Image (cartoon, rainbow, N blue to C red; front, side):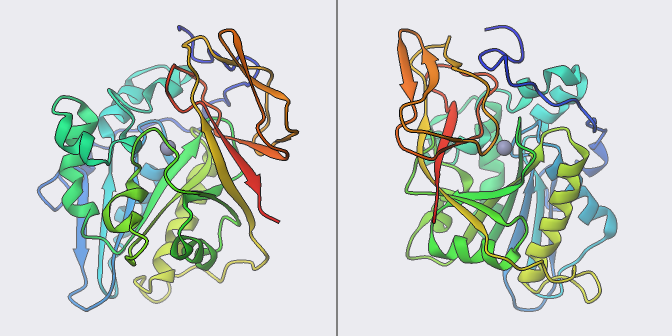
Length: 325
Ligand SMILES: [Zn+2]
C-alpha cells in the first residue's frame, strides 16, 4: 500500500528533528569489516559490544556509536566492539525525503529478524543476510551486547528483550531507562540478535538487550542512546576513570511482559483507532481491522507497544504487553 502512514493514518509520524549525515568516514573500521571497530585493552575482562543501525532509520544508534568513536573511548579492561549494522538502509534514508523515514528500516528484510540459522545459511541474496554473516563472528564472541533502537511513535524509552533473569538484572543495573519490556519465549517473526546463540541460551551467561530510545528522528533519542551506552559500559567496568556517568536515579522500574505480537492476515490491515504508546486497553476492545476480521485486545490492561506504520500480511504489526504488578 502506498503512503508512509498507511494503516495507521490517525497516528502521526513525528517530524524529523535530526537528519542522517555522511558516515562514510567510519566505513573502513579497524577490523577488515566495514563499519566495525574492535578495541582490546590487553587486560582480562568482558567482551562488550554496542550495535547501532540494526534498523537503518534508527539513527540514535549511529549517534551513540560515532560519539564513542569520536571521543576515542577505549576499554580499561576486556574488549569493546562497536558497529553500525544496516548502513545500506541508512544510506537510502539519507538519500530520501525525511517524510519517508519509515520506509528505510531495512532494504530486503528486517535485520533484527534475521539471526536464525535458517536465514544465516538459507538466504544467499538479501542485503541483510549478507550483513548478518559479516557481523556474526563479532556477535558470537561477545559476553554482553547493547543493541540500540528507536520507535516510530513512542517517545518514552524502554529496554526490550528476552525475559531471561540475567537480562532483567542487566537492565536493572544500567538503570536508565527505568521501563523494561521483556518477552516470554520467542514471539517475533524471526530470530532477533538477542535470541541468538549464547544470548538466548538459558544455561549460558551472555547478555543482549535492546534499548528503544525514543522516536526515530528525534533529537532526544540520540541523547538517551548516548546516556544508556555510557551506563552500559560503566556497568561492565570498561570505561576509563572520569568517563563514567553519575549513578542512575533509583526507583522501582516499570516492568511489562510481552504477551503477544499480532501479525495480520491481510495487507490492508489497519488500526481500529489511534493508540498512544503504552496505552492500556480493556479486554475485548477492537485493535485491528484485518480484512473481514476484527482483532480485539485479548486480555485486560493490554498495553500497546510498537505499532507498525506499514502493516503487511504476516509481519509484526503491534506488540501487546501486560504490566507486571
Ligand atoms: Zn529497531
